[in-house]
Structures are given as structure tokens and as C-alpha cells.
Amino acid sequence: MFAAGVNCLDCHNKHTMKLKIEGNGLCLQCHGADVYEVKTHHQHQENSTGAQCANCHMPTNRYMGVDDRRDHSFKIPRPELSSEFNTPNACNSCHNDKSNQWAIDNLQKWHGKPKALSSSKKFLMALNSGQAINLEDHLSLIADEKLDIISRASAIQQLAYTTQTITSEILTPYLTDKEDLIRLSAASAATLLPQDDKIALLVPLLTDKYKAIRVAAALSLIDSKVSTADQTVFVSAFNELKQSNELTSWRGEGRMNHGINALQSGDIKEAEKSFKAAIVIEPYFDSGYINLADLYRSLQNPAQVNSVLVKGMKNLPKSGAIKYSYGLHLVRQKAIDKAVTFFEKAMSLSPTNSQYAYTYVLAMDGAEKSTQALNKLKSLIMNYPDKAQLRELGLYLSQKLNSKADYDWFITL
Image (cartoon, rainbow, N blue to C red; front, top):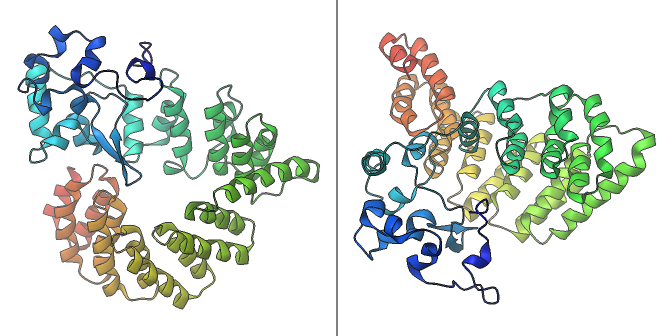
């Protein structure tokens, strides 16, 4: 829409922001009614809910848990991508009793095969859906200048999902890129660099023209020994970082970020204070409990870990993340049978998180229930688009149980 010259005021009154025209007439200002407001296009009864342009191309989503508004990305429904990447599509969001394959078959019957996505867009969708891609593909995605800047910048920030280290030769061009979003993301990804390279490449960004980039550089350098000559610019940018945290300190997330920064700086007491404050300010923010529990774990205080996570589960009974953290705590306390129960709960509360399923099955195996673990994994694995880690676990369990049939089943996935 933007590329075609369409802007907000083509649809909204500039004073009230109300729609200029109700219904399909809004879209028909530009799109021909003889092509689009006909059953051959929308495949629904005239004037029905399904015949409304916005219901297919601007479905209502809920943002921040409370804010229902229409999606302004103007997507074409792509159920074939839903099958591959677990993304929503307007067809199945409305016809929720039907499968993605049902939607795929009907759309192909009506409009033919969908336009193929570029490999870069597929790699990006894989990353966004939590699937693993190899470093070569990840770097090709970042380097693809046919993609929009925000997609490439997002991919740079996600490098940590693909690799634990990166070379200066790879990251330097992005740290000096003319595009501000690229530099911003590269400053965050620079934590993957060797220490000396990180310092050398990030110090120039401490004086970038944009505060966001200066703050990102300071954040990545918190645990580094910046030279005396560069201390002045580092302290200046670090003070901006602290100021940004103070501005968001009314939220649990702001206090948590301050605590993480304090922890990276080695200030344990300040980190503990901040994590506790995050819980007080926002008792329904699960990361506050998890970070405080992790701090107590690092201090080898299992009683306090237990207390914090139990309180978190009481306040947030539907948080899969807290139940998963509590399961890990039980494993460390050698109560693996109890841990299995919490991993199962975490998995049911977060059904798209393959890591929870992996840990649940692995814990069953650790509890000497290997046969049940293998059978459970076979029933679960098809629910996850990214099957690589679960498949490896299946092969391991099949070998352990000397089951060639199961091994052959997993090898074909």
C-alpha cells in the first residue's frame, strides 16, 4: 500500500481518524468493484461478513492483551504458510473448525497456486516462528538488499538464535551501515563478537548521532574493559542507558532491564533490588520472577528460588515459562519425577514451544520411563514446525531402546 502511494489519510479523516467510507466502498476507491466485489473473488455470499474486504485482508487482532484493532499489513491469506510456519491466516481464523489444508485446497481451486516466496523471506519466517536455520542461510537473508530494511535488521538481532559467535569480518559492514536500523541491530548483535573486536567496533557507536544506537552500544559493552581513553564516551552513553531504564521504571520490564544491566556490571544487590521491584510493580509479569529466581540460583540459594517461583505460579497460573523454570529447579534438586509434571504443564500452556516438549520427553527418559517417553514424543512431534531437535531426541531414544522400527520412523521425518 505504501509503495503504491497510499497513506493513512486516504482512508481516515485527518481530524477525527474515523473511516471516510464504511464497508467495501473504502477499498473500492482504488480497487475495481467489477474485479474485487464479486463472488468469483471473495467466494462468499454478497454483503455477507466473508464478502467484506477488511475481514480477509485486515483481520482484527488483539494487541497487548487488551487492544482489538485491524491488522494494517493488508495481507493476502496464505494458509500454506500457516502449515509450514504456524502463522495465522484469515481463512482459518474465521473457519476455525477447518484445517489449513482445507483452506489451501479451496484457495488454489479459486485463484490458482500462490506466488512463491523468496528464499530470504522463508528464512525470515522460519526464524520468526522459532525454527532453526544454518548460519550461511541466515547471513544470506541479512545480505539480501531486495528485502526491506526492518526485516534485515530483525534478522541481525536474531543472529544469537543461529550462532554463539560471529566474526568481525561479518558484522563490521553492518555496524558501519548508512541505515540506522541496521547499525542499531548490529550493535545488539555485537555481543557475539570476541571481546577485543567488540570493544574496537562498538566504541565508535558510543558517539552515534542517535541515542538508541549509543545506548545499544553501551549495553553490549557493559561487561567489557573499555580503555581509559574511551571511558568518557562510554560513561556518557552508559548514563543515557540508565536514564532510559529510569524512564521505564514504572513498568516491570523497565525494572527488569535495570536489574539485568546491574547484574552484567557485577552489582548483585542492585540487581536483586530491581528484580524484586519488578514483581511488586507488575506482579503478572513472569520475567520478573524468572530473573529473580535465576539470580538466587547463581547464589546457590535453592530455598529462595523455590519461594520466588511458587509465588510466580500462584500469581500467573497460566504462565508456561514459570512452570518450565520450576521444572528445571526440581531437576537441579534431583526431584525429576515432580519435574516431569511441571514440564508437561508448561508444554500444554505453550503448545508452540518445542523446547518445552523436548525437555518434557527428556525428563521422562531421565525418570526411567524411556518407553513412555518415546511413545509420547511420537505423538507430539508432528505438532511442531521445527522438528530437528525433537527428531534427534527420537533417534537417541530409539537407539537406547534398540527399536529399529522407531529409528526408521524418526529418520524419515
